Image (cartoon, rainbow, N blue to C red; front, side):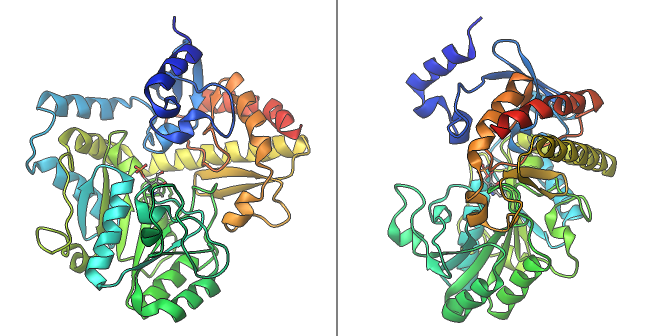
Length: 432
Ligand code: PLP
């Protein structure tokens, strides 16, 4: 049997860092990345035959767990009919209808292949529809890796974005204004200074890429109000939260506050059921600016791929209210056990949680975590030992303290029991 280490060594010769997405390289937790070869329900199995309870869920898509029979059957049926035709086909509209049925405000939908493509296209659409250039984003919100959205946090109010990656030009970054999350006065100031040039504010419905950071009460509604007042669009990035967070209605985080809709949504992860599909959606009048009805170009060889559509349709059809209440309940059990174990071990922390999405932030109980600066100031060094203790005990966590933990409809009492049994020793490891 080839070991994880041998496979990783070989992969490093072929792929930068041995990976196709950086967080998989275990950079922030150290050690050798695990090579998974199979998933079943709440479990993953690595190349050495070790089984883990999975709390990554393929970074979100595996809402029903791995290899859900209905999803696998739908995919097999679609594969048997051919892998793709480069034409329209009925399952595109089926998935679009399922999204529209659950998301008031998603009047029209365009399928794409990744969340990155969804947000990138939403930005282009917002610029095309408004004739304005500037985009406002919040520090610590991740919207995929298109150039302008990699502009990182500048400190202070209305800092014109600095490139967040080599290869992003200053010109691209300078059209993205980065401000602190949950900061209404920063938003007021940005609009006071640049209001006539702002095409859109993009925000995660509930940020979950700096750890989970709940929006303060009314913050999303405030973004809606100020964008409307200035003729800018609001883009609600629900790639992570869409069809996962269930506080009010089980289609996404935006259902948490009533009485308003964003202009545009982006979705991904769950709507592809584990295959590469994402979408942008929104008001008809805005969406019709997209080609071919409008002048804003977007296209994709694999957009609306029938196999991916089949996985998405099956996933949304099986994501019933019962599944969501199961996931919410198990997430609460794990979050409660996590906080008890850390408290018993004397580790200062906060559990950052919205619906079933949660993460831990070490050493932050004095302030909580309301923005990127506070997330970054935590005792992140405690996470590596915590992570490796969990891994040794058969629990696969996201290999970064800034990622949310994902439960699924397949996490039964046995899987949750394994997690609970592992937490005390991991908390002790974090205490050191
Ligand atoms: N937007 C959010 C909120 C995300 O969490 C992610 C990915 O994690 C993306 C966009 C980008 O999606 P993808 O990785 O499919 O390009």
